[in-house]
Structures are given as structure tokens and as C-alpha cells.
Image (cartoon, rainbow, N blue to C red; front, side):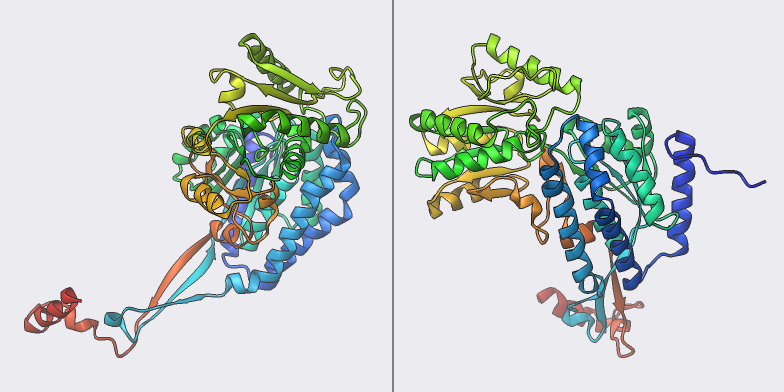
Length: 476
């Protein structure tokens, strides 16, 4: 009797699933344009025909997750990127002609984007759909097979995606893996052709070590403390609206959420009042407000509370924007919490917050704010609110970050034709759009020699002819 394959939520099943996927990749090394477009269409059907179930699964995992935010932040950008990739895929796949140096003419050069084979994707819990679909789109467009490890903190979403993937895709094309941290470690030890991990910087280090044993190239989408810098002549109303929106989406559980605000000391009280007013208007109630999400897990809720307690004990001032004065513990929600004068050694000033807590840091000179940013690990995003083009250009030239928004937050992530990725502690590599296609491809250079080639003139035995040529070649 044939041996039945084990589910991929065990280490043995994981190995079997990988072996089957590797066999499938080796059997079809270069899927054509029609095949890849068919894969992307299947993914679009999976999303469109199961929107309600996907939204409900994410909501169940969070306890309370805004349906609007799931559609706006996960389903919509996934579909937009998918359609953009499908539309441009023919151009992306086309071999690229490259110039040939004078010395090698009349040969021809071209670069062919070739599928890598089997790609691994590790998905975090905060955006389980978008951060699974985004890498999947790039990897399928590039012609690869894909294994996706979902977070153990989103079991309902993971189980649903596993069922849907098996229903919409041929065997050996896409596999969804669910399981705990031990299985995640086993997943990252598989000899993938490329591994994309989204998560914390600390875990990213472990992932990179595991991948190194197989010399697996990695894309690390991490996080860090993304600043929002407000200049003196900024549009403060606009800045407050954007900062509150970016911070409170998904209750701050966003890798590119503004982590702290830098504002001139003379403008601090004005900005604080506007942040309070905007948050109150957007979320007049919190406990049973379907627009405001819960903290994903009791462990993360406790972590945020402990960090606040530490800051208060160290002398920080805390202002919570809870307009209805509700008790939020039972529903695992936190209001927008502004933290003033927080000592630098506190966790809120050292670690990525990943919640609706917003330290506000004062500066006296604009250059002092830039020095503050540059003295810290390079962030995943930088948000600048300013109207002075000279100063804007100065910030772009004198700071390093994964991405920048000017007079806005978050939205750079949703741009289909721009790469997304971190730098240094906030990540390495990038994906989305054409850059995602390239990340999951091998750009194979092909040199085609002409029958009229003169390369024989440089072959041994060496004599006067090659000496004469070298004089010309070295002289340039």
C-alpha cells in the first residue's frame, strides 16, 4: 500500500511536504507566462470567494479585529499587488538585453530571470493575510513553489488558509504550515532557495543563523522604532490626523506604525492637544467599538502594561485617551497612550512598542532631532511632517531608513511599484512589485559568442599580437 503523506504540522510531515515541493519544482523549472498568470488568478479567486471567512478568522484570532481594517489593510493591498503583478508579468519575465564592451563585440549579452525553485515564507501574527499573500504573489510571479509558515498566534487564520490553499492550488505548488515555535525553527532549517521572514529583530537573528547552515539567502522584514518627525512649520492638524491613524491602525500592532514622535519643545502642548482631539473623534468609545482592535494575546497585553508601569516608575508622565472612561482589561484593549519625558533606559524608548503607546520626545533644534534619529538603530520607516523643500531634502539625505513618508504615515507600504524593506536592524532585502519578482528570481547572465569573435587573439601561446592588444586594452 502507498504511504500516506503526513500533515505538514509535524516535523516529519514538514520534511515530506518540502521533498514533494522540491520534486515538483525540479519537474517544471521554468513555468511559462500563462501558467504563472493562472496561479495569480487562482489566488485572486481564493481571496475574493472567501472574503467573509478570512475576515472572520482574523477577527477570531484577535478577539476583536476591525473588519474595515482587515479589508483595507490586508485584502485590498493584496488584490492590488496581485493584479499589478499579473498585468506587468510579461514584461518582467522578458530577457533583458545588456550592452557588450567594445572588446567583446559582436557577441550578445542578456539576463534571464529564472525561478529559484522552492521559497519559504514565515508569516507573523499582526497581518496574517497581507504578510502571507504579499510574498506569495512575488514568489509565484517569479515561477516558484512556496511553503508558508503561519504564526501559532493566529490558528484560525492558519487553519483556514491551509484548507483554501489545498482547494485552489495544484498539489506541490503552495503549502501552508501551522504549528508552534519548535516547528517554525524546523521550517527555517529547510534548504529553501530563498527564505523570507517577517517578525522581530531578535527572532530574525535566529532565522538568519538557521538559514546560514544551508547557505539559504534571506529577506528579513523586521521592525524597530520608526520616528515621526514634526517640523515647526508643519501642518499640525494634518500631522496629528496622520500620526493617530498610523498609530491606532490594528491598535498599533504594525511594524511601520509611528513608534515615537519628535516635536519642538515649543510646539509639544499644541501637538498633544491635537492628538487627543483626533483620537477622541475617531474612537469616542473603545471597549465594544468594532473599529478598534484588541491586543492579540494576553502575553503582549501584559508586556505593554509592564512597559508603561516601568516608565511611570522612572518619572514619565502618561496621558491615556479613553474618552468614555471605560474598563478595557476584559476586552484586552489599550487606548492611545501618550508618554512624556520617558527616560532613555526604559523599554518604551529601547524596544519596538507594537501597541497604541506613543512616546513624545521634545527637541530644541531641528538638527538635534536628526542627531537623535541617527544615534539610534536605522528604522523601518521615517515619517516627516514639513513644508520646507530644503529641509525635506536634508532629512532624506542625512538619515537612513527602510522607507519614508512625507506628510503621511504607513501608505508607502501600499505602493505596488515601490520596494518595501528595512535596513540594518530593521531588515535586509525587499519585496513588493518588480523588486519582489527579482528577489525570488535568479538573474542569469547569458553571453552568446559570435562566429566572428576575435577572442582567439588572446589565447596561448602568447606572442607579439597579444602584447600589442594588451597595450591598447590597458591604455583604455
